[in-house]
Image (tube, rainbow, N blue to C red; front, side, top):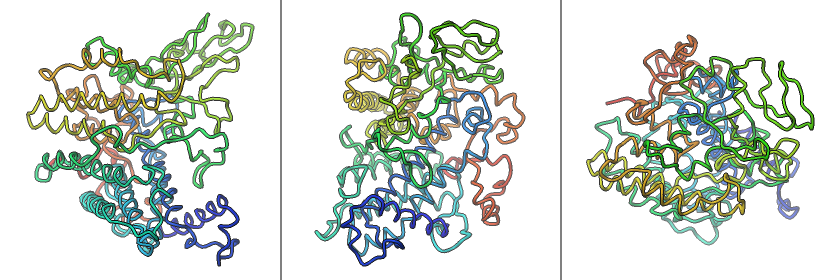
Length: 590
C-alpha cells in the first residue's frame, strides 16, 4: 500500500502541473521533478473526493446487479456473472483500487498539510471521507487492513469489521468536531477545494450526522449495540429538507475526454454513467419495473417510472416506448438471453438469420428464435458530448432513431444523491415502524417519497426537454401517486418502507446493506427471489451454497497475491470459493 501511495502522489502532482497557470510554477521547486509537497489541501481534496466517489459509485452499481435492480446481457462479463449470483473475481477490484490508490494514498499528506495550515474544515472533510471509504471497504469485503493500512507497512494486518466500524464512527465524530471549529483567515477556505458542498460547512455537518444515522441503523442485527433512539438523535441533526442534502453535480463537458489517472473514464461525468450508462449492456429487471409501475398492487403508476426506466423509438410513425424489465426468475438467461438489439438503419430490407428485417427497424441478430423478442429490452445507455463526442446525451441509431433515452441516474450529467434527505426519512420510517409508531412511520415514509420526487424534479426542470424520460414529473401524477398509490397509516408495512427506500437509493451500496440486514426476505422485499439461473448453476452454488445468500465480495487479487498470510488469518474461509456467502460483521446476528 505504501507503493500505491508513492505512485498516486506523483501522478497527482503531474495532474496538478498540467492544469495550472504558468504563475503557479513560480516556486522554488524544479517543475521537471515535482514532489508531493507542492499539492495544496484544496487540490488534494478535489481529487480525493473524485476517487472516493468512483469507488462508492462502482460499488453501488455492482450492488445493483446483486439486488436485482439491474441485469446484464447474456455473457461472461463480470457484471453478467454478478447478476446471476455467480460472481467472478473481476467484481472485487475497482472499489478497492480507487479508494486505496486514488483517495487513501493522499490522506496522510493532506492531513499533515491541513494540520500545519490549521485548515480545520479540510481536516473535517478528510476524516469524513476516510470514514466513508473504510466503511465501504468493510461493507464490501468484511475484514480489511485498517489500523496498519496506508502507512509504511507493505503487508498490513487485517482488522475485523467491528474495529473498522467503530473507527469509522470515531472518524465521523472527529469530522464533526473539526467542522465546528473556526479556521484562521490564513487557511484556504473550504470552498476553494470542495466539489461536493461548495464549502458549505453546514451541509457537511448534516452529511456527517446522516452518515452516522445510516451506520447506526445498519447495526440492527446487533441487539446489544443497536440503539434506535441514537439513530433518531442523529437524524435530528442530519438533513431535514431537500435543500440540506449533499447532492453532487456532474457535467457532460465536450473537453472532458482525457480520463483520470487510473481509468480512461471522464472525470466530470456521473459515476453511474462511467460504470453503466456509457455501454449498451445494462438493463433493468422486471422486479424493479414492477416496483415502479404497480407498487403495492394499487394499479397506480409511480411518476418516477418514466424517469428511472429507459425508453426507445419504435415503429412507423416513430413512437417512444418504455423498456420492459428482464424477469430474473424466468429461464431467459439460461436460454442465451437477453441479447442486445441491433437496428437496420438502411432504406432497404436486409436479411438476418433467415428472416427479412424491414428498413429502419429493430431486430436481434441471432438464429435463436426465442431471443427475437429481446428488442423490448432497452439498455440504460446514455450518450455524451465528451466521452462519445456526440451532440447530446441521447443515444441514437445512425438514422436518428432514439436507441436509448438514458435514465435519470445514468446520464453523464446525472446528480449523485450522496447523503440526502429522502434517505433520512426512510431511516426514520423504519425505526419508528419497528418501535410500533405506525403513524409516525407513515408520515416519514410519505415524506421520503415526496422528497425523492422533489429532488429528481430539481434536475429534470433543468433539461427543457419534453420527452417522457427527461421532462419534469407533473403535480397531477405526483398527487395521484401520493394520495392513491402508497397506502395509508393504517396499512403501512415494513415492506412498503424498504421497497420505497430501494427505489430512492437506486444505484446505492446501501440497498445491498439493507437486503442483507433483512436476509433477502420476500416479506420485506415482496416478489424478490434469487435469480433462476443461480438455482441451476453448480458453479454459482459452489460460491454461494444453496440456502445461503450473496453476503460479501471476495478479497482482491492484490491482497491474495501479496498479503496472503494476513488475509488467510483474517477469516477461516478467506481463500475459499464460498467466502462470498459469509456475512460481514454487522450482518451477523448477536
